[in-house]
Length: 287
Image 1 (spheres, rainbow, N blue to C red):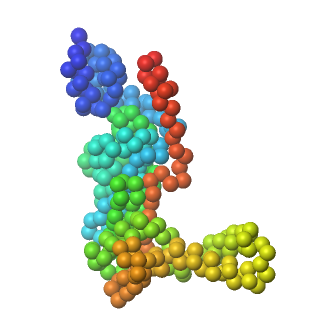
Image 2: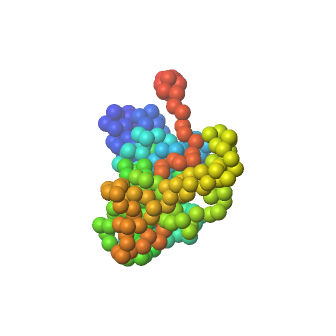
Image 3: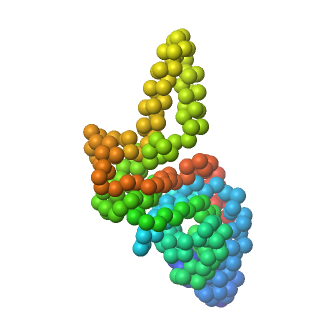
């Protein structure tokens, strides 16, 4: 059977596969669109393991809250182009909702859980996306909060989820936005491990500008510097991003308390992909 351009176009629109892969699939399946779709899916799943060694540091951070349960999840892909793909966005946002609905205990439980929308396990759903999108996709991490919650996500790159002692949507939204902007590490001083303070003290004590200072003077200067550093790490001591004359502690005083928060930046700590576009073009020409 002759494979037409219209058939290839239809298959590409349904699967997201490349032109040559779609054409070959149709040729293998005698022009049967449904069989070709299955062929591509099987091919993608078969090659999914090969894609696991690729670098995936792009992607999206998404959050979702419903009935006092909230989730934040990071899903990585290889390129920013795929991260902006509507199919990928729908998958990640749907995954956040799924996590809220099922409340898995860990990544193994999440992968084994069955998605109500596609009736596949999350592990198989990821493989299905790898097949259609053609890039490594990895669910890197997720976290669940329960209680009085708020969230803020900035362009899919920074995600914040917070838990508070009371529900005030407007106030908590402002605090979530502040956390995204100012990147605190702790709610208050009492959360800071002594090891963090000790390490910062060691670094400050070793700085060259203090080398010639008397020991007692140097200790006082270091104490002041470390105290300032710790205040910058604490949410309650930071100047409110919308009103720097007011601290977050003053903003919340008499209204509510922040119990905990998580702030994730997309790809933090991951190896970044280095693209060689000339090589990529040559590889496409060879194919």
